[in-house]
Image (cartoon, rainbow, N blue to C red; front, side, top):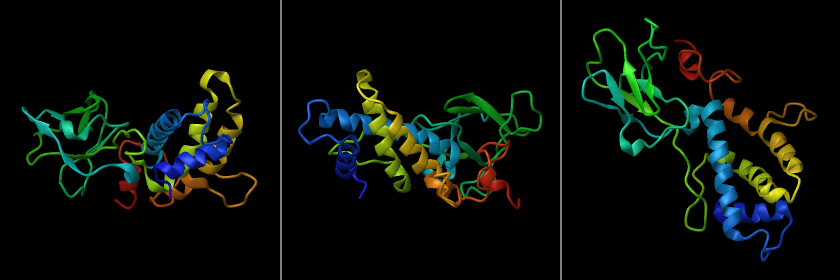
Length: 218
């Protein structure tokens, strides 16, 4: 369920096109699914970053001031968490370069500059929300399993907008209901609301100086 072939079939059904349709070639549909996966990975990185972050990686440095993600971590989506222990016990505080209370500030998309007095004695670790890969017969979707259903209406909307041949509005309206809940259905929080309920403070923004999923009770 929700593997590549299943998503392809769901997309064909949503678009109401047969398997042998010149307008909806398989390679094009897979490309739309890949674009949809990238779109929703960005949204999840904003709303539920803890659930989609990859494994812990150790930052590298040559001067104990500028710290970089290893090349294996790739280019992160959004901001990444930084910790001063490998066990993620306490996160460092991000801030502006002129903020004396901040532990570090962003130096580049993959680098930070430490401004904590005394430096970092034992090293720094991070969790990064990775970019997604292509989807095809050989590459299965990598996005969070619970969010894969969202790829179909987004991919349908992307497909509909190709050359302005179809109206994407019905697909976007369905995606809106699926992701955020049906306002006419009492208690329906949608897929994103359900995922947020797995963290500690539903509905809070993901960056408030310190990370919201670690602030409660600390």
